[in-house]
Length: 153
Image (cartoon, rainbow, N blue to C red; front, side):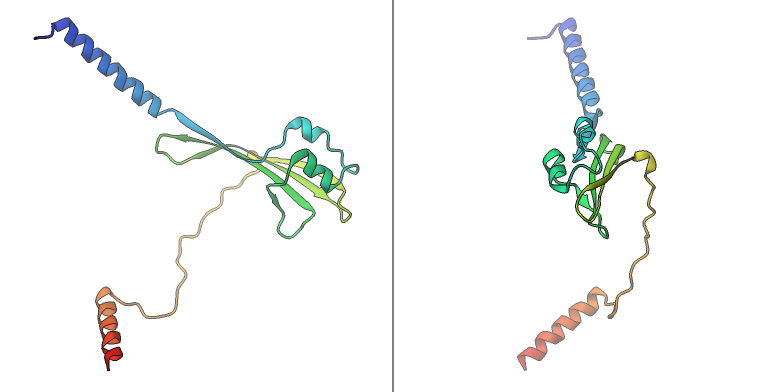
């Protein structure tokens, strides 16, 4: 049974549309949000000088991190990234809420830092030298064989 020319063209057109729809769907971006970003309404309820660490945890939950050298500084960090197909992720939004407490655990200040304050960090590509011999594969094979020969004696 032979297909008519019209049916054949209809199948080809449908197949092309399916391929185009699949390619378009594959190229849409993926958005991912990570971290703990408190609601603006919850932050508005925090009044410096009137609220303690325990109350902050009740309102906002645990902080993302506590400053390394200053336990009186809590950080709530959130980041939104967007990825297109197989490309590297791009940070589209970042927000850090910085809460500072005094020695008695009372909130003293609330600050917000965004992506506009971020700095690019240049990674160092050099390698750390290590002690020891640099051996080729052949050197390693010979050394292992010598080790087994010594054990037999």
